Image (cartoon, rainbow, N blue to C red; front, side, top):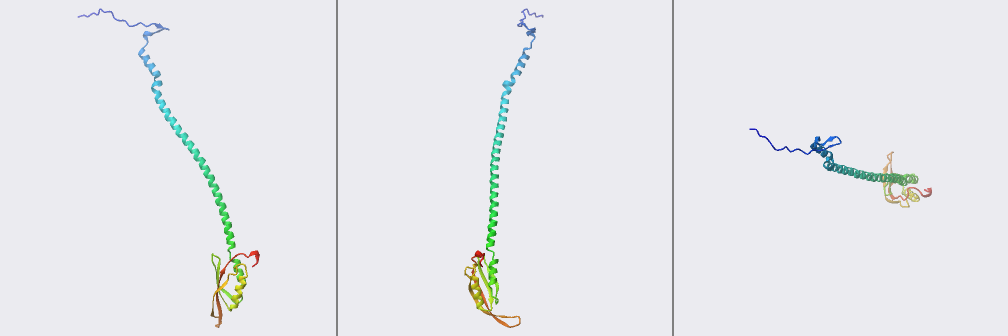
Length: 207
């Protein structure tokens, strides 16, 4: 059987020719896709760029805050260094002063002149066994003499100086016999004298 379509075929819309371009030959679907791709970054990619921008701006803000804090810390550290330097200078100054004071105290508590004075006051028949000077400036002398008179003379002469402030007293004595190198014996008076050292340096050089 042969089927014949007797209906007239519907013709499409005829588009005009513009500037030498036949609009009927233009692929409108392709043109629409190209148009869409042209404007895609504006409405599709913009949120992504905005998000990335916010992240970068946040990182910049963190770095700026860190830099600000670092500058503040450096300023504080600089002030601390200055304070430490000032403290060290003060410590060195105090150390020098302490050394000077210590030297002065050593000079003032040096018993050399005290011992020189009592050595000059010792009578010929008198001798010391030991001399003890304490940190509290007390003095104790243990010795012996051939006579009580020499012991008394020594105490009077030593108290006459400015070193002891007339504080020396006889605190103990006893008579003993000592054997001499030749085998003979002699009588000696052992004694104990105590007092206080009131000055290690004589005033005005008068001893």
